[in-house]
Length: 305
Image (cartoon, rainbow, N blue to C red; front, side, top):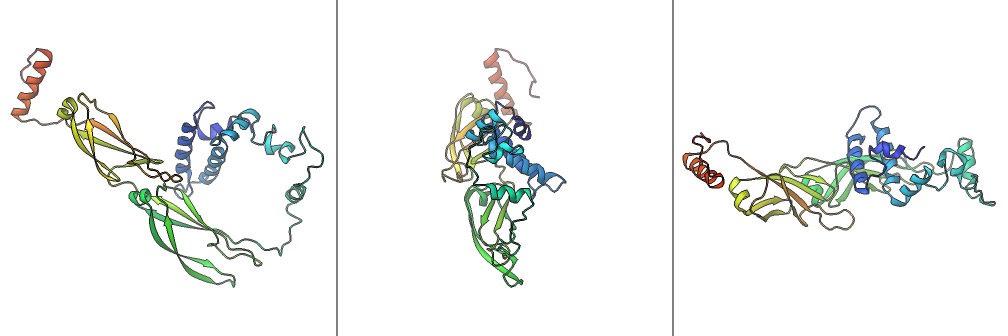
């Protein structure tokens, strides 16, 4: 692997910022997620995107990758013997801690006991959420079927706490809630995959930031004023400065979705655009004609007719 392949997988330049890498990863992971994209090759693309972000999303790993084309500090990575920690050009005598695993891989697992305890298979459950449920989280009870130690099927119910701030395509692991293990091995895990519906209020999300668009009239844009902006936390008053141009963004701090880790709310970005009326009555036309004349010193009869 050369030191540009992972960048190519995400479709970003080698000089891309961490924010640009994160945005590219989110876009591609949603595009190729197996629960969303059922086309041939989508799952493989999804795994490649995950692998690329695992390295490039970590500044230390990224620096190693940029220098060596790998993240283990050895040129060539796992593709050559340098990736086996002791067989490269800088081999250290006595470093044989992983020889058992190496021989096991080389000879197809021939040293593994077929009667050893093995973990059961993992299961997947898809949970549909509204836009607001994903933002604020919820308590839910899910039902599914799994195998038991005696080989039978059982219907199981679990209470699940959906964390506030989850996004479409993210998943939560519930340990030991999957299929029964083999030869006395532990149960597998249950992965709850979240599918978030589009907002009915026109909101969009990128991480913890919520976006919306809102029209304002020409008078408010020109003279300024106070308007009410709808957010996921309720209506918020916003002061519009005089002379606000169309497509101007305003940031409402703390009115976005919660951060998954910190729990702090992100921001809400509202884009104001000037709504030009298509029909005017006589008084409105007269007022606008007077306004234009005051601005330009010219009078053009019938401009708004």
